[in-house]
Length: 352
Image 1 (cartoon, rainbow, N blue to C red):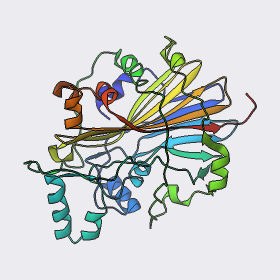
Image 2 (tube, helix red, strand yellow):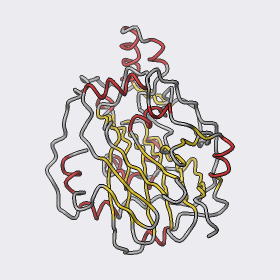
Image 3 (cartoon, helix red, strand yellow):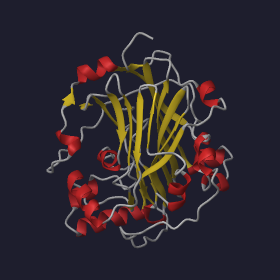
């Protein structure tokens, strides 16, 4: 997380308790070599994004019911796809290099774009919920582009971001910007890929887990319930706002892959948006958004998942210019075609 973004959030404390909810965040700098080694061993992978914020943590907890959702980089990377459907010349060279290092199997079972199925870790009184379904991809067809790109040296794990601080109102502007692309569309689902077993004593893998049956009784399709965009658009005072990055990679100068989270809390409701954003230059743009919304007057929380994607050629046909493609993702994502969407209802207890 850049120093400017950390500075912009100092007006809000790291914790907030409001209307039976507890919100907490831990913001740290880019992980160093020791932490990266621990994450790599835990995930049984030799390759991680250029910038991993392994100490960052956001947790929202409904105290009466014990339902909580937390977000971490290691858990998100655990949910990365096993194989990328995006091919560029750089990816082929990466595979060959891994094979020369004796990691042939790893090279073939790794998504170099770091696309993740992660929706957050949900628990009830400390027991992790398992058995949820993920939205299935719209197509498994490979997208191939043999561009004439040269791979640069990977950045050091000790790289820091030096960004000058912007105005003190930056957090307020950011807080208003991430409610877009909440639309009404049909949903679909598919089977979730099991997480790989870890050889370390990872807290994620050793916690007691609830069964699929328990999960299905707590989490159901929303049956018409939708995120209240009208409530979100009201000019209510923002009581708590945070912006957190989990990981980011520049794909060897072939684009950008980033997973970040924004949360804002008002007196009537809150919204969490986690976005995986991918831009492969000259090939495609992809966005996977997961939103958690709760109206404090209700006894349930909604979780919406959206998957959007377009090829660069498709965006050109939509007359989306390069200034938009290489500009603010908040604007670009609105232009992407919606491929999958699902809204789930998470029960919190009570009869409202």
